Length: 172
Ligand SMILES: [Zn+2]
Image (tube, rainbow, N blue to C red; front, side, top):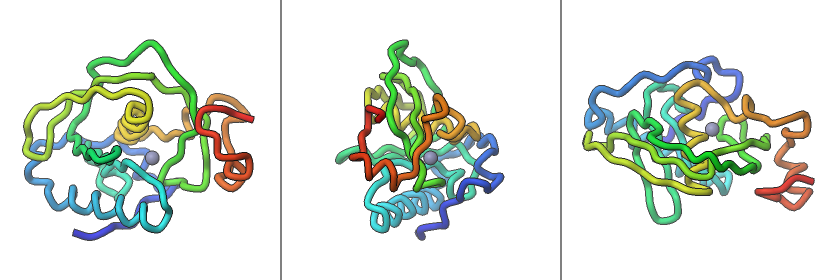
């Protein structure tokens, strides 16, 4: 297993629609690399909770998430339910880590997926985890947080955002 280079904004692969994975159990190496890449990013940048396979150049429908003590490998995830209630927040992305984007997300989602052994599972998520899932699900369809910027004031450099106190759920 090895950390791989994270593809950056401008790389056409980030705009590809990722392919379904026929056999999750056959993707152990890709999953190990994804995990190693997330950990390497966390160590160098001090943040980061989720990554999609397309971000290391493999347009396959696989997401790896770490949320608190829990971790999730989601193959072929699909929404089963999304809440009508939404919330707005500053989002960021490994593929443009110095840019913050003000976006709107569903407050809660339920996702069906296959785990690393191919077993059918479902995940109910709210708040932070729901927002992270929606961000990573977007990657599988070639959609970036940038595309969801709500208005002309919805973009900020990380430097400016930090200067203004790093608010997560409010604007200045
Ligand atoms: Zn991202």
